Length: 255
Ligand code: PEP
Image 1 (tube, rainbow, N blue to C red):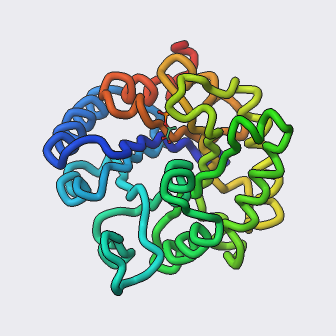
Image 2 (image 1 turned 135 degrees about the horizontal axis):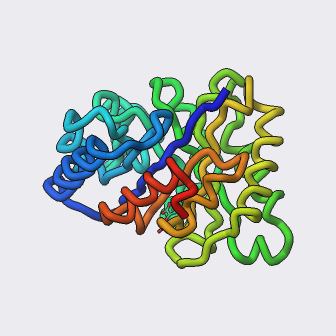
């Protein structure tokens, strides 16, 4: 069974509430006017401050949160709880490399957050990926296996099946360098193999590729058998490039 593709945009710390709403409206109009594959999930992770503004604009675009606190409530200044996100989003991104590197999030905290998202009925997107140094030392698969082991610890196989994995080589994020489709496929196949021991049915897990995806490379990446979509940073901020990626992923022969 073809489970489709997820094309996701990570807006990071960009766009005000008004700019986010305008983007959703414009993209919705484009989506209405074009044929794109009907098994495609289009998902955007705006900043927290835009979530209320984009909610309800269209059912063609799913909404996600870029992060979530590790507790339900309490004295955690500046944190956002699952209870606050419940009516706003379906997806929650956990463990983006910027959270790991710039905000010191470790695998144990990430695991706590993953379990909390699942207990509240969200679909978590767990981000994993190696640094350039790890890749050059031949440690890519070890690093990813350990991020998956620790990040998914204590999660039942039925729930693991619901977790979306985003493979994002750290050296490819925001750098313009991207893994070749073959390099990415190799890691995705290894991730699928690891998930076979953890997930009720690893073929149902979505495994997205992220790292300098753009309209020129997206179709090739999406053609790989174990790549089930893309997580896109920079190119998701402009409507033209994000929409082109959607079209190219729907119809890779356009490339
Ligand atoms: C990201 O931030 O998840 C990402 C993949 O960014 P970019 O597409 O800009 O490399």
